[in-house]
Length: 276
Image 1 (cartoon, rainbow, N blue to C red):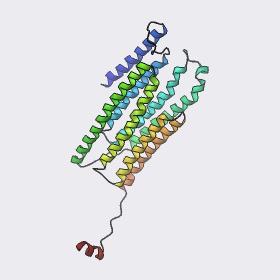
Image 2 (cartoon, rainbow, N blue to C red):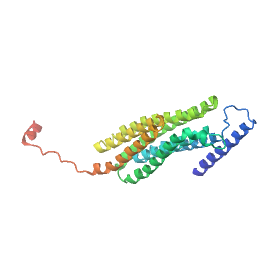
Image 3 (cartoon, rainbow, N blue to C red):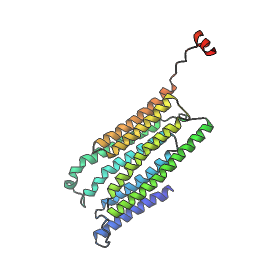
Image 4 (cartoon, rainbow, N blue to C red):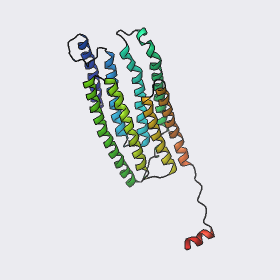
C-alpha cells in the first residue's frame, strides 16, 4: 500500500508538470491549470499532507501519545510546505529579486519545521510502555469507542476532501481550498480529542490521566491556531505547542508514579456517626 501511494504521488507530480507545460505551450484550454511549474511542487506536498492526515485519523484509535505525535509530524510537514509555497511567485529560472521579499518567512517556516521535527523524536522517546494499560475488558471497550470516533472523523475527512477538490476545480483556488481543508480538519480534531478525553474518563478518573488528556487537547487547539496565524507567529506557536506536548510527556510518568498520602484513619466520632 505504501509503495502504491508513493507511486500515485509521483505520477501526480509528473503529470502536473506535464499539464503545466502543455498549458504554457497553449495546447490545453483549461484556464484553471497554472503556467508556473512550481505549482506542481505545491500540489505534491498538498497530496502528501492529505495522506499523512489520513494516517492521523487512523492513529486516533491508538494510544494518546501516538495520536499526539502524529499531529506534530503533520505540523512539521505543513510548516515545510509553507516554506515552499512562496516558490509559485518565482519566475523560471529562479531569480533572487523575485523571491527576496519572501525569504524571511520561508526561512522562519523552515526553521520551525526542523525544530518541531527534532522535538517529535524527543516526544516519542519520552513515551513509556504500559502508561496506557487498562484491564482487558475495559481496554477492548475503550478501543472500540476510539475506533468509532475515528470512523466519524474519516467520513468527515472524505467529505472535506471532496469539497476542497470541487472548489479548486470550479474556482481555481487551489491554495485557498487546501488551507480551508486543513483548517476545518484540525477544528474537527479538536472535538474528536475532547470526545476521546471524556470517553477515557469512563475507564480512568485519576488526576494525572485527566490532566494529560486535557493537556493534549490544549496542544491540538494551539496547533489549530498556528495554522491560521500570520508568518513568524505560526512557526513560533507551532514550536511552542510541541514543547508543551514534550513537557506533558516528560512529567506525566513521574507525577503518576509519585506516592499519594494515605487517607486519614477514622476517628471514634466518625465510627459512631457511621453506625448511626
